Amino acid sequence: MNRFFSILLAASVLATPIAFSSEAGAAPYYRDNHHGPRHESWVRGHRISDMDRRRAASIDYRRYRLQAPPRGYRWVRVDNSFLLIGLTSGLISNVVIAR
Image (cartoon, rainbow, N blue to C red; front, side):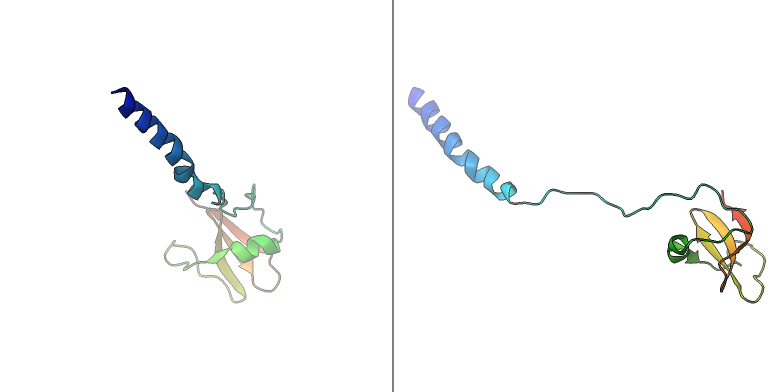
């Protein structure tokens, strides 16, 4: 019985480095979703920043029951808000907050 425990102890001591050797070279896991800071509020007449303009998604205004945009404007969705912006200037003409 004593010999059995000594063999079991020796096997566990020898197997421990083998069991953990595969994790030693593994890179640590970093969770980064690349989300930037949220914009506090949108104000009519202000200009939308280039960063927000790049991450803004053009939407189908009919799907969200918004008015048709005039020529030279488009509806975009940023941070759960709908913005009517000018294509060339980037000025915010209308703001609709989604629920």
